Amino acid sequence: MNDGITQPMLAPMITSIASILVACFSFFLNVLYTNKEHRKKNTTYLLTNFYNPICSLLAENRELYLHFGPKTFSDYDMNKRMESGVLWESVKKKQLFQIWIL
Image 1: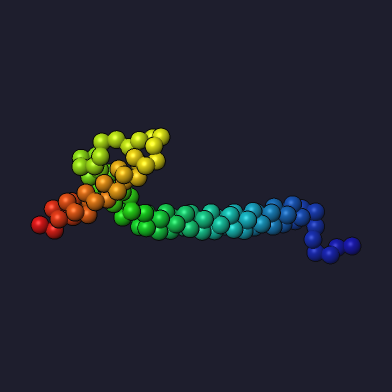
Image 2 (image 1 turned 30 degrees about the vertical axis):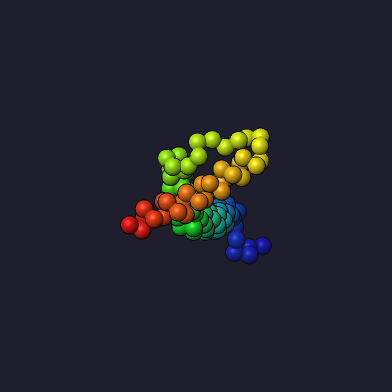
């Protein structure tokens, strides 16, 4: 019986089908990887735009505190810590902001 597919034609057909399947699988993985990288870059961009102003304000506050703030905070006495914090807030509001306005 000859149904049109002979033994010599079977091996190249299986190889062709396998290569097509591998190419499709490779394409699918590439799309997933590219989409994942795009999401990662987008998330990094959004986080950077959100946190950079906050980080710069914190860095500026740290520099001002080092130059003008109280020299020590008590590690153990909560009342002294609160007093130092209140003092720093009053210095910022009364003194430093007036300098920036001028």
